[in-house]
Image 1 (cartoon, rainbow, N blue to C red):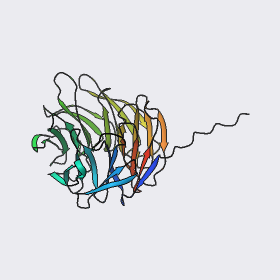
Image 2 (cartoon, one colour; image 1 turned 30 degrees about the horizontal axis):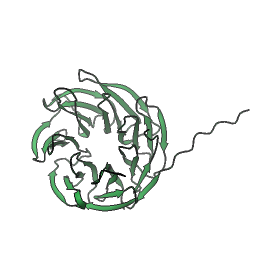
Image 3 (tube, one colour; image 1 turned 135 degrees about the horizontal axis):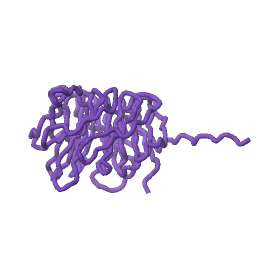
Image 4 (cartoon, rainbow, N blue to C red; image 1 turned 90 degrees about the horizontal axis):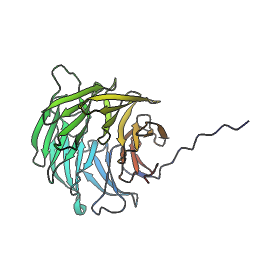
Length: 329
């Protein structure tokens, strides 16, 4: 009688970063000022600090302190130059200049909402860019042109729609002859809506979850996205040529609660950050489960992919795990 086959051993992190001194709530990879070699990793913590990590030395190069000890919930660098955006629970969106080792806030925008919604950026012709963030009304999204802070519009749901608060946002642009900004927004009622920013109207709305949408990501090349919520279900949805959203499939998880989802830049893998302390890896096209990364001892709040495929996960256990899985060839 043949011996039963053993499941493959769980992979270990390539290495672990320690020293944030509080829970990690935001991660973002950054090419740095040289643009060569190892990327830098930016982390935002519950204590309001942003750490800039060298993945070569595995140590923090510097610490940014601009959010008055309030949790940093979102980090994003602008594609042109060396500017960083950080969002905190202190109701500030801070702009930092990271060139030549600088570490001072050069500008900031006051946020009107104390919700959990992270902002999103769409780069335009330098030096202009657009940012979408939670608005003054509990169900509103405010869009500004930066760096002038000019209001583009306020997106308010239709009178008969009651989606609740926006929970996650993603700005993107259709690559056609007349590119128009679009916004995908996940809401408190479990729905995902596609907004035409120029027309200030909802093109389509689809109910994906029975609980608030905690994270979403969108593959504009395949017109396909994914969202996670407080429940056990990952929803995969598509966008057709008529700008209509449709749920394609759902994937049931072992445990409830997804804090973050991210598609790898090469659109081969999907990673989820779980309330159950685990990171789950899926094949993006088929949604086949590939790995469960069971390393952390508290909620995994965030995941991030580098351009080269390296994966980082940040947790309430104050650690950042770095993984090299199914590397790009």
